Image (tube, rainbow, N blue to C red):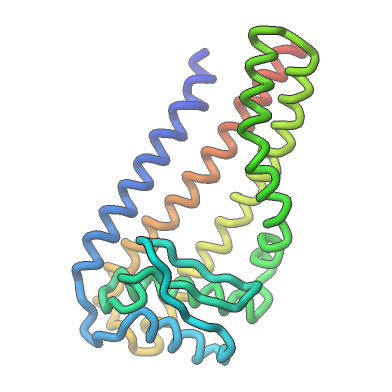
Length: 231
């Protein structure tokens, strides 16, 4: 019982910690303006231009930390504060997304794998939770073979999600690494300004680790139930 509780409560607490950490880091560093006063959109463009990328559109999207790179449409989306902002947080996030554009251009292998997995992961993430909940209910309270079979399907679906989250980690870490290097090499930020960027991007990376831990814990929980039935 303790093992199962840890698999459920542990990831929830870790996820809450990761979310609070990125919120604190972003709110802190969005208040610190860069000396060069370059906007996030300008920084992203400079990073991509230095890599020979001239066919990616930079657009502004609503929300906070809704920033992302769309490799299919070659579109780099920045949230309002990061698009026009000149803070350390804005430049860090914008350069990070530009790092994804560079990954796409150079054919970064893990990004290719991640993109290949997107369709299957979307389906798996949609069905995994409902299938697992139905399977657990039937398995524990009805004891039917259908419940066991649903749990097997749920475990397979969650396995896809776990693999996707695992592949996402090196993609995100590498994008941040590229961002940090380019911000200094291009003279967008001075080295002593990088502390705020490091804090923001490292906190963001922790949210991806938390997502992987949560998915892995869910999978282990289902496998534990299946194993207990087999024993």
